[in-house]
Image (tube, rainbow, N blue to C red):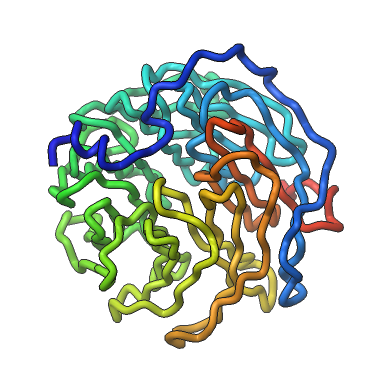
Length: 374
């Protein structure tokens, strides 16, 4: 599909022209208010409350990501900027400016120093976001060029020596993160690529597309190892590996999130109740791996302005019931952006143009958790 036609076919809010609005203050923290969550199904799931509401973006918030060290939240927006906030107290830190069109995705390096950003301007920028390794905080280190249309998604591998990116040009590119050299181009899909992600061990890349396909690639050779397609063949907005590398959370534009067994190429669980028919929403696993007997959850944004959290059974039992345990209510527009920090046990969310805020959520009753250990 022609990239222009692809953009028209994928009606993403942050690709639309927005009227100019006065800049907002860098930060506006609302008083914590309990969310109207569903009753907890177990001791690890709770009603959730807004701890901080972070305001500063002047257009839709398209992505939020916690840093691996749990110190920072990065938010990207259609206003062409990325903002960094403290994940502990919500304070605004800095703005990364340089893209000439909206920002669609961001990815942290494993050491929480570098941030890669993907934009409608067909470029990827790599920043020293936090000033680590003796660098200048907020400095753009390199610009990766090669895609011929909007870059919609980007991901570091766990070793942080590779980047993968997906574009409306229907390709996935793999880059040397240190030099910015493109190592290979994968002719991945027949429609815009909406999601890329590495398995934790770095051996696999998953890509997803508006063509309804999810593909698993050998990260070293670029060979396609497996293609997953559901019978509904709905456009895929997001695909994320679980930490075990065996399971995928796949969000599709039929208002469904499915957990796939990668090796058996079959769906284990289906989750519904949210609304997802227009936009590509972020979804993924929310697991506190360092907590004994921790439950397994899947997290998703929604077009009905809420955030949804489901508990899923452990193991590989097919079709065992996934249970909706919390609905986080507080945004005033569709929520595309969600992320979970297992270290902090917090959720971040970001909303479209009728809201433009980032919210940090904590389990009700723990509104002042201790900062992460150093």
